[in-house]
Length: 474
Ligand code: P53
Image (tube, rainbow, N blue to C red; front, side, top):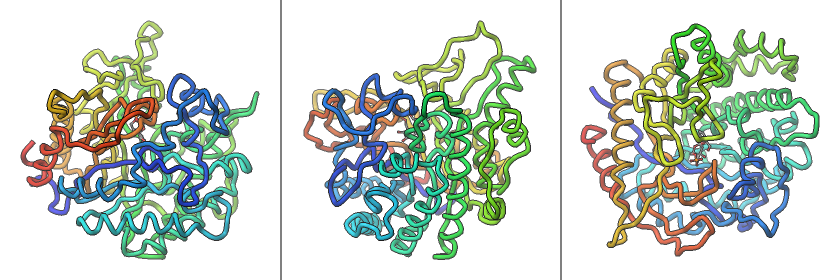
């Protein structure tokens, strides 16, 4: 009973939110570098406001982030001390191909990740690598319009060829696109998309989606060819939608909202565009730019496992009077009156994780991997300089219990669990440092002040114990 004996406990980060060193080692500029902290962030990440160069008025937190580019040895040692079996990180595309359309990769960038993976192995940590976590070289955005263009598939294929060959034997677990459904919600951050006046945004998004789905299938093909040991996963921003009432229209609205997300995974896992989506796109006048051979590739190269992030469930209502929304503006949803929320308005629902796991396992019947979950909170060090984050421990313990129920009581096959932001890092949604998720505190504030010193929070020893007991002692 309980979790598998080889259960992959660990934590997760993304390059642009922790590395910094944005102009070092030959790295090129990426879309995610240009998302400032403050009120302009939302229009920038949604593609409504063009930000193609740094300006004086804004602060760009990704430029230096928590400086993991220079401090990864210290950080990985701390992960090792907690007993991590895996560490999920992402590769910054523009370190490997600074412009994105070169034929030869940048050796300095390749070497950086090679050293980092070796450092993980030294601590018996299995790297879990997201190939793209919201990043896209700016040159590809400016020259090709990023994922709206079919040429992106070839550039991504080059990237995959290079990294799969170079890191063969060092990395076995790969995720093709972080939260692939983010194309729909934050298109500039998710896929480098911005919009021209008057253009049909939905057309651009689904066109980009087809290109990413195709690129994901090709990546899966190459990964398996290069090394049959490779395991490739898709990655969904998950969270089941509840109907606000049992009114059939509300139930239908919740079903539709779930399908908007399942759409991507249906293709990546089952290898086919689902009927409901084809009909809906046809009604909306949206054309998928499918070329000869595309559908065969999608069908032949489906993923090995389903990974997802889970922070909260969501609620749908068709009643205009039920209009109180949760604060999270990227995935705004009707407020659930039965749930508490984080300081950022993200509602807390551990049972929703069990429900989400069951929904995904019933639908795809492939192993699951929870690659993000956690509580973003304001942490204040006490008089001894330590953060006593019992609220985070409570959140994580309740979610781990729910996932244990899904495994023990429902029979879900779960490969592992990596908490989001295992070390404090820059928030994707807000650009703040103040929204912290880590077991490790980093001394840095929203304006970029601080020593960057790392220190253990109370949750550090708690998670160490959870891992040591394979989730028995929460
Ligand atoms: P932050 C919104 C809703 C669900 C997941 O988010 C999201 C977002 C983006 O805000 O993104 C994932 O930092 C993402 C991470 C991100 C994390 O959730 O806004 O994969 O990059 O940091 C948490 O609190």
